[in-house]
Structures are given as structure tokens and as C-alpha cells.
Image 1: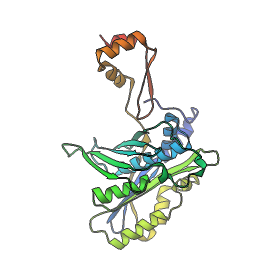
Image 2 (image 1 turned 90 degrees about the vertical axis):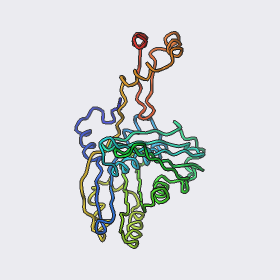
Image 3 (image 1 turned 45 degrees about the horizontal axis):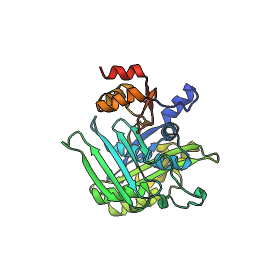
Image 4 (image 1 turned 90 degrees about the horizontal axis):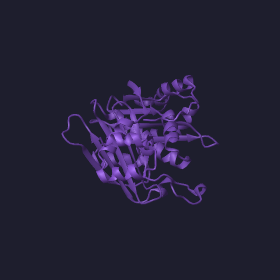
Length: 308
């Protein structure tokens, strides 16, 4: 992966931002509900820089990245990963995000620029999605084949449609809160999210109570921008449900693409395509990873060597 530097080579600031971006897992309501809270300001800013996104695209894909980061809290095996895919008829067109058990998140929008007239008149993001589907695919260590489930988009909201997916496809009451906070200059100053899920035996009244509590948080991203810590927020919001933290781990915008992997892709192209590329170029040939927008370049000699 080729990650753009958003810290102007300031290692101190880079390490500070990296230390804050973590996911904290907890249980509450007599251990009958599990949850996670993610601080992901650096992740969303690096995503924005690599994909070269405007504010609207950053908001929508940022919510997708935060959701993917939260979903990785449900993974256990060392090779496990989850992919969320949204396809829709509206200007958003769709997105795909992926996370693994190590907290590595990658993904992209299905259009480089969301085409919207009079963006300042948009009141609800739901109007940008239209009809469509949300598909979840899980690669689990103890499963011989990937598990995949799909639901129709009902709300035009990643958080609400994800909750609907878990209720319809997996019959588990679940809640999400996804937040990207911008300052007056459209810079991302805070980003994060919360995931809650009822476990077997959870009291229905406590599940309803938790759902109301999570919806009453105005802007998690703004709280992070003001310096609030994830544990403080959970302890304050869900005080009466007595949350207990289990562990925490890193979360990061990261893709395992490399020039060597792209070489493998070029080697597997049909012979006719490779000959045409060698003859007509243009050089250097650029190969993009759509997951992270890293660009890998190959000169003519490198391309010749791939055919040997």
C-alpha cells in the first residue's frame, strides 16, 4: 500500500493520532449485551487523502469505514474478515468496505464523485441512496465457505440499514451510531462509532433502553474532536446499564496490496493484452488498487520481464 502523508512528516503527530485510533469492546446489562466504540479520526482522514475525496464523499465512505471497523469487533479467528457491499440507484451508486480481525479497514465508493445539484439543499443523506441492497459477506475460520446475507435498503442510512440487516438476516437486535464531524473549513476533526448487540437472554426493556441511549448521542465525532475519550463516553451514556470494558485494539486504514501483487495481476493478463500494452503503453503503465487508490507504476523493461 502507498499511503499519503497527512502529517507533513511530523512523526510525533502521526504517533499521537495513531494511538487514539482504537476500538474498545465492552459488555453491559448483566453481560447480556455486547458493544464496541471506535475512535477513527486518523483512519477517516487517511482514507480521504488516499481516495482524494470531497466532503460529501468523505462523509458517506467515512461512515462505511467506521461501520467496517466496528464489525471487525465481531471477528475472532486470525484469518477472519467481513465485507459490506451497498448497491443503490441513487447518486451514491454504492460502496464496498472490508475489515479483518487485525482492525485493518479498506474500501471505496462505486463512483469517484457523487453527482448532486445544489448540495447545500440536501437535508437527508437518505435521498442520495435510492433503492438498493446491502450485502454482508463473512469469511470465518470455522466455516468451509463464506457466509453471505442480503437485505433491501430501507432507510438510506448505513447505520440503520446495518441494524436492519442483523435483525432480518441474523435475527439479532443491533444498533449502530456512525459519526464524521467537520469543522467550518470542511476538515474532519472527529470520527467514530458505536455498535451494540443483544445477546441471548437480554431483557427486552434493557435492549429498548440501550437503543434510545445510543440515538440520544448527538455527534460522537464532535465529542472526539473536543477531546472526550471513548471509555468516558460509554460510561457516561450507558451508566445505568453498568458497562464493563473487555479489551481494546488498533484500527487503521490499511490495504495489503503491493507492487509484487500487482505484478502477479499483470502476469495473468491474456497474452494479447500484454503485447498491446508493451507496444502502445503509455509508459509508465499505472495499475490502481481500487480498495485504497494506491498507484503502482511499471516501465517498459519491467513489463518485458513479466513476460519471460
